[in-house]
Length: 485
Image (cartoon, rainbow, N blue to C red):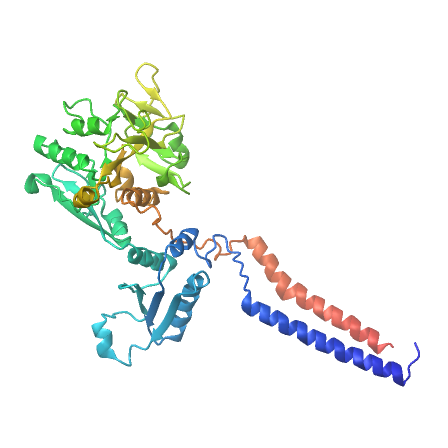
């Protein structure tokens, strides 16, 4: 190539054009990076991203969310921003602001701000205070704010039932605290004292009674079911030594169309999980039902009873109603099993003494149902006047769950596998809040590097000896070659 004035000028123009094109490309990339953001979370369980359940919760928001944090600590502000940004990436109507609590102490007392960094989360005309922040805390707070009306859960007492506030191993105080975090009101009711079941109860709970119900109390429960009340009945294995194994609740079971089977569930495979007793039912597969939606964690049920549908019970599946036909009376229940034991299990009818042996004559081979979900359409008694004025039938869905074990939600067994999450799913389904599901805590599984001493010594030698030696050797070779030119 001949170098002359013309070629030099062309080369100069080419360089200028290259620089201009390069700067244009960089500018366009910068603009695109501001408009289109791509993030990838490579941690084991996505600890820097929102859980799928939190994302579903955000989709139910119908109004902006305002979050105010009261702190002047820069480090605390940074950690709060990191968590809130996960929500803001999915919803642009979530705002975050900070207020220095030292500027107006009187206002802080009026707002009841007690912790540095405390947050007030506002949604529509409701507010929630958070003294600590995590995805679980914030999503649960949004959960409670979305729930317009507080749902009442009332536990029947007076017959040795598991108590929602006491701390004994067999009681339900730990689970009750989780219910309250989800926006439920938890209370108790003694039928012998009140002799009435209020109409404002959303879920009535019979939690494994140990003493007999009075006939008048049973009639109150039957009347509650007949008028469309939602019910959770936690049972226990039947005892053949008593004349009334259901503690007087047999009429209620007949009304629902179910029966508790005599005996206790035995699963010999439970020993593989380190469980010494054979009367623990482990469930790992779940039939299709709203309670089991996206649920795959194993659950543990100590000393569970089997449940069956009464053979002569007619449900809506047996006698479907004609479309458009006016409903003149309460329809029958749709009954579906949603918890079934594995095939290797069986229903043991003999007293357990050490190891259990299956008997073809006495025992029933699995799978065995331990939980039934019942639902039906009922007349909405609260809208009677509206029905009369508009001359139409307004109905709602009644939901009932009957489960052959009360231990799985007790203080002792609540932390086993997926017991807590399943329990929350049951209550959310009973309260017609399937979209509200417990937000699991994300466990950081990849923050600890676990390597053997041999590999640790190798890495230390590699970075402290090999790399410096390679650099010194490479530099010496280059210096020696240049010196001999």
